[in-house]
Image 1 (cartoon, one colour):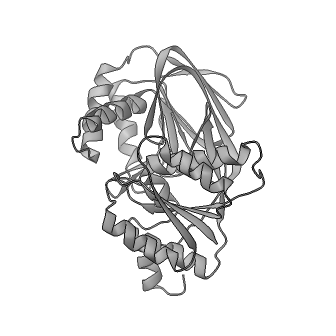
Image 2 (cartoon, rainbow, N blue to C red; image 1 turned 60 degrees about the horizontal axis):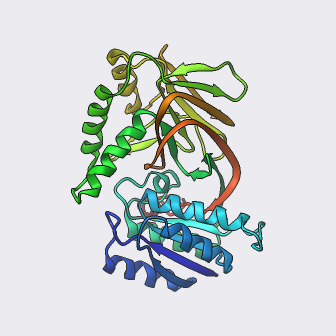
Amino acid sequence: MRAMMIVNPHATATTERRRDLLAHALAAEVRLVVAQTDGRGHAAELAAKAVASGAELLVVHGGDGTVNEVVNGMMAARSAPGNDASAHPMLAVVPGGSTNVFARAMGMDPDPVLATEQILEALVVRQPPRTISLGLVDDRYFTFNAGLGLDAEVVKAVEDRRATGRAISNMLHVRKAVVQYFRTERREPRLTMTIDQQVPVDVHLVFASNVDPWTYFESRPVRTNPGTSPDGGLGVFALTSMRLPSVLRVAGQLVRVKAEPRSSKLIRQDSVNRVTVTCTDPVGLQVDGDYLGVRDRATFRSVPDALQVLTGVPARLRRANPAL
């Protein structure tokens, strides 16, 4: 099996020594080429070239942003003139970032070494990949979430902090969320949302999810749409009020062990095909934690059966119960 391992050397949990150890382990089972990214967009280019050259497996070692780029590169290559549109190379993720939402949603162990062990086990026993849907907004695919409004503004604030070379953390996201909440327009909704063919509704923010959970705070999942699955449509989470009591009530529900967010100020549906949003003023858009700038309208779509992913039972659980 021909494979490429795409590594983001600047990801939080990626080191040169670890990269070499993981590559050596994978090379025992596949014909492996290792490539490192050198800037924004490079992972997508590498992925597209790998698919065009006939790679059957792409392994990503990096954070959520690198995974997103690789997926977009894979999807672009399949539709490029002269390429085989029926080719469906597999994706596998070795977590290398700080949050790793998609990898964890696919059952990959947060520890890169144990995640590599999971991939090797899947290859040895010829475990079939899981075929999943993707989200699409404008011309950008997303693996776990995208959003218009407050979360995009938080992502931009965090990216600005990262650009200065300073460290980021989950608590930084919380602090920036609080700051952006008090800066944003909270009186009148700026967005009008239409879900599938339903009646339009005025809202303050819109989150679209392709998996559950929406993200993580350290080890705790943050669940906006517990019924959403990459085997189905998109989850939609939107607020019709940004009054502080309403926001705090809903936010508290998101981190409960058995989260089931409900509120008269919340619109939540866990499996929809299409969400169209228009904006009275341009608002920020984020995709898989990457800020894409402002939009005056956006359409989120579910793309079924889009990607084949190697998944697995966490290695610690497999050792504890060999029957898994």
